[in-house]
Image (spheres, helix red, strand yellow):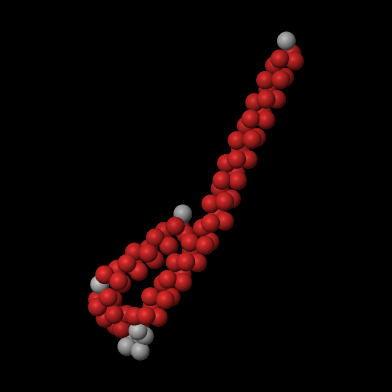
Length: 89
């Protein structure tokens, strides 16, 4: 969940930089120094956003793997219970 929040925030920041680049240019200069330009800031945000997106993919795959595994275990368990019930009769 944290990764999704990170790359969502990164996308919002990138869109905001494109829409209101003059305000971001002055904010970057005031907070990070006048030698730090907007382009490196956007590059860092874009790289971090892409890395967070890439890191989310294995977690999604792991989540769906566990869902399938739980479904199979439930089906096997129900089958065993049913066969035990029929065998006892």
